[in-house]
Length: 178
Image (cartoon, rainbow, N blue to C red; front, side, top):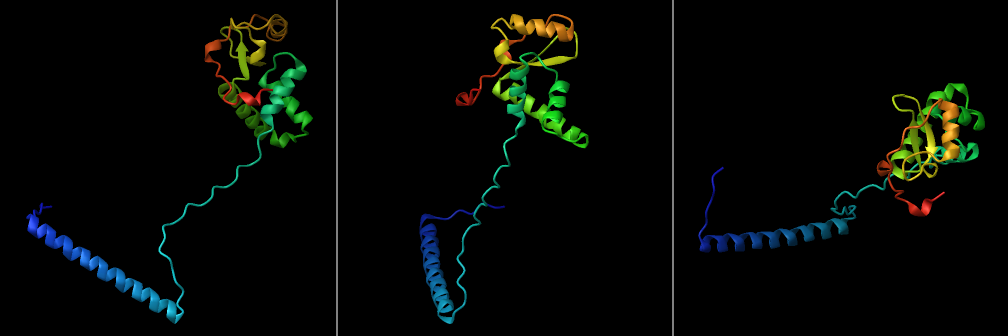
């Protein structure tokens, strides 16, 4: 595309011309709108499309509170399978919905672990199996408190690996302490 250059006189002339055209068309449009309203035509306002209100969020998941309650009630480390089995029996969930319940519990546990920092998983060094514990049960050094370490040893048959306390996030909702 070629660049067009105007002299100062031409630029002023063009600016005046387009200002007059804008004024003329604005008054003409106002006249057309006035006549349409007199004739009874529905007046349409030229507006930009307004954003729609987002849908309300669904009900809050019950599983985060359930996991914390079960850990406090049992007062010992629990496996994910134990948590899922407890959920199935306590909430009377049919076996057909096992996959759905498992996914919900694992999702809530992930959120409690990575976002809220309320639970951690501990396991034996070199082993895949892990147990869920409350963050309060872990000392500053990363070791389980003695009563919970004893329960861990009886379940897993060995000593728990230390937890990296620096990797535990601070709760972003401090007023939500349980």
